[in-house]
Length: 165
Image 1 (cartoon, rainbow, N blue to C red):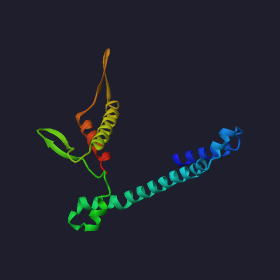
Image 2: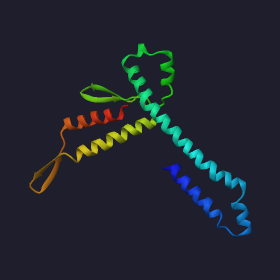
Image 3: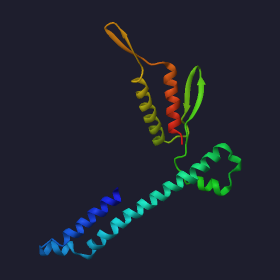
Image 4: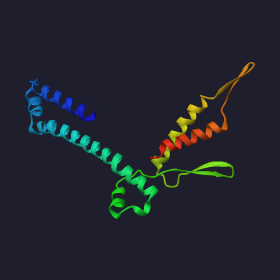
């Protein structure tokens, strides 16, 4: 979308240059630097988009496969595969650690600050949905919402599963 916007804007600016009648502004608008900028900037935006699309395709095909292979069979990874997997910066995972002292816990030690923020947002959105999906209980004049503990644990497990890659 950015590349398209820049291209349309550059084309509009290219067309407006011919409408500038002032001698001073006409020289500025028709200067060779402006002409080159109106051509180069859209080309760079399109090159960035193509590079981003190629990286996303590579990341979602090759790197995801290698990440799963590393989790399941780390001793079968070749040196080249381990080097290629280092290209992926955001491959850290949060692990559901089971229960400690009767409470579930999640190991976040491998996550970066951005990944922790993403996990927090995912948990917050999921819990919000479950809380407002709970049972409505009428007690005469008072209405309460009942959310079962099992639903909350299931919500946390679902959120962690969505946050994992």
